[in-house]
Image (cartoon, rainbow, N blue to C red; front, side):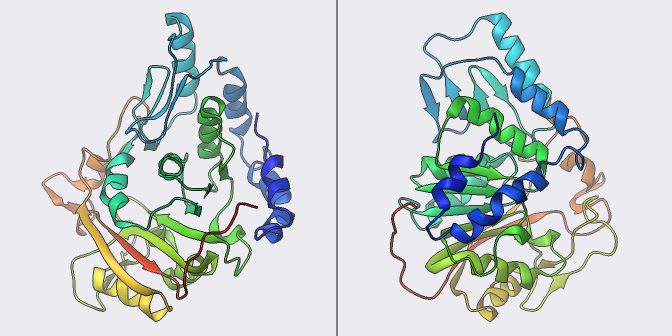
Length: 333
């Protein structure tokens, strides 16, 4: 059910050959059942998904998914819903498979709507999505014409969720790998667009992360970065003491001007602030597909403008920036 061999074979001999040589071992480690105790159960769910044929694939819809001209009967639909529920929690989406609405914690389509018209067109581009989760935005990138989309995320559950969707969507130019950015070979310079959304504030060194992203890009390529920010002037940065919105691994929240200055410092050109939005409890919330605590539980119950620790409530910025040089399309390896 999970087979990366076609990707590895396709990459040999091209721009990504250096990564292809490492990929088999990286995937084996990333999907090690010895390291991840629940992985066997998730893989069993994947095997037990019902066999259904899609007549329509929906990549440009709010709910990415598949449908049939002859919808499955109630028993099969129930089986499908129960199997997919076995991959709880679903964080990024939404999706819909044959009438089953996977109502994820995040309305990731809102974020896509905020950035879609502000980035370079994806037609003919090889795209990398860092920290992609189950791959919702990867599917939207493919729907916008990307030549090849590679998502990376070190969480095995999210990778299995991607393969559950792939069982029905069946596209050979989109992959989610069980890896982090540190597994990408240094100075690869093989991607036309790189997305990093919801990752930067989890890195102990934001400058190192931005440099890693830069090193993935071909000349003229574009970075699309989304991260937590604060109101403030150039140079202002919040370093939370302890947790931030109950997250223990939040390190740096810069002001927008500070974030743009970081990009310029590292040699990016034309950094642009695309959007700033306060995250609402309509965009991130608990659902039947993500039953744990969510944003409403992470805010001050007496003041929704503050996190439960007293910091400013989550505010997210989207910026774009480019690598020096003239971008030119290349053929797929």
